[in-house]
Structures are given as structure tokens and as C-alpha cells.
Image (cartoon, rainbow, N blue to C red; front, side, top):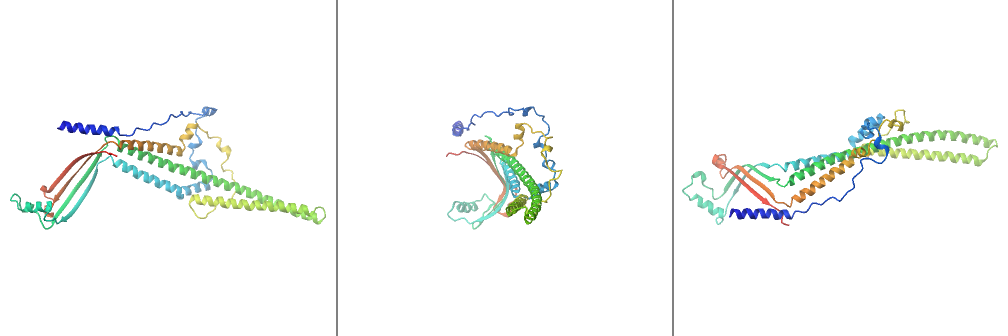
Length: 368
């Protein structure tokens, strides 16, 4: 008989195993080259631009302060930080699923059983027995029940399903970290781009103001020549048109600067505030200052990009999720039980004879 039961169980497990979906194979992909077909592979493998911290890369103190403020206050970056905390919580949950669940419980209840119920008849019959003492007699009108102890349950990770879920959660946690780095990298780039845009607009504004002064002087001279009969009204109108055109360009530069400044304020998470109006100084970032840094290899450039790292971890998480989904079709083995003090009289709850325990093993598998 025991042999037949064991045969049925083994056969059921094998049948369930046959229903597990097959793993989807990745399509054949061409291998990526280690480097491009240029002389870049022959370059010196010194310090690359990607390895320079942004605080060392940008020389302007004002820009560094703006970036620090943006990192501290930018809403998008704060959301990315919260996603890290969420993924960390999911990771802890996935790790906890591999361990037995233990809970401490205390309950107190009371029930009045009907006269024609199984429990009511049982209590009545028990009280008529001569084999029990007074402590074992039950209150038939209202039966209390006191319970104090521990419950536990554990799913044995026979097939590695729970471990795959932990791998998925861990990959998502790493992806959220890289996502935060990607947001921060984009934020630093945007703030720096807008900062240097303002610097360029300041230079353009300065040049336009100088041109306005020159054109205004020229206009006065042409007017004097016209008064002396040596210039025509048309010449005066031409100089006036040029002056008005330059003044219009100046107003447009001021508008663009204000718009760019508002964009910076939005990125750094503040209302109002201005970027100092000064010209490009000798400490400003220049193209010649970048010559000391190496570009690096194409593979290194890709490996330093947080968005690519994030995509890689997301892919790993998806694969782990698929693996866990496949293994979910296999039977699950669980063990549960409890150990507690249980009595229908409060004074007897901590009596040694009130100790109760239970152990139960189970197996379950999806049918549809």
C-alpha cells in the first residue's frame, strides 16, 4: 500500500514537471567588437574623461554649487532615490521568503455551542465522564478558549523558485541604483549645459551692448553730416534701422537668458535665484583643458554609462522572473506547525499539561 502511494506521488510530480513551459531561447546575436576599426585601440590607457569626478571636471565654483543644490533638491533625483528604497524593501522581502515565517500569537475567545451541535454534545458528554477531574470539566453554557504560542510555516525551495525571485529583486535593486546614477549624470549635464549657455549669452549681450554704443555714436555722426548737407536722410534711416535691429537682438538675448535661468532654477529645485552675470574667466572650462584626458576604449565608454548598466540589470531581472515563473508550475512543498499553551480555563493556561504542538507537511501544484 505504501509503495502504491509513493508511486502515485512520484508520478504526479513527474506529470507536473512535464507541464512546465520551455525556456525561451535568445535569438542568435552577432558578437560585439571589442573596439572600433580605428587607431583608438592604440591610444594610451590613461585616465579617461569618464573617470573624472564632476567636481574636478568643472572649474567654476558657482557651477559646482549649482550642481550640489540640484543633487540635493531635484525632484526627479529624489524620486530615483525613493525607487532605490522601494527596491531595497522588495529585496528584503524576497530574502525573507527563503526563511521560515514565525509569528507570536495570543488569542482569547468564547463560544456558546448549540445543544444539537457536535461540540455541544461532546462537551455535555465529557462532563458526565468519571475519568476526568474538576479542572477538565467544560463550561457548557459558555466555553472559553485561551491560546498563547508561536506559529510557523516554511516553503522549501526545492526547485529554486524563491531563489530566482531573490535574484530578480537583487537585479532590480542594482538597476535602481544605476538608474539613480543615470538621473544624476543627466542632471549634472543639463545644469552645466545651461550654465555655460548663460555664460555665452552674457558674452553675446556684452558684445551687443558694445555694438549699440558704437552704432549710437555713428548715428549721431551721420545726423551731424546730414545737418551739414554731406549725408542724406536715407543714410540716417539706415543707421537707425541697424541700431534698432541690434537693440532688438539685445532684448532677445535677455529673454533667452531669463528663460535659461528659469530652467536652471527648475533643475535645482528653487523658486527664483539668478546666475551671476559675469564674463567667461580664465578658470572656465575650455577645449584645450580636455586634451590631457584620454577618450578611452569604446567598451570602457559603454561600461561607464549607468543607463546601459541599468538596462543590463533589468535584463537579468527579467530572466530571473521568467525562471521563477517556470518553476512556479512545479509542486511546492511546505511545512507548518505551532507550539502553544492552549486551555479553556485561564488559570490552567501555563500548566505544563496545557502545552500543545502540531506539525503538518503539504504539497501543492497548479492544475490550470
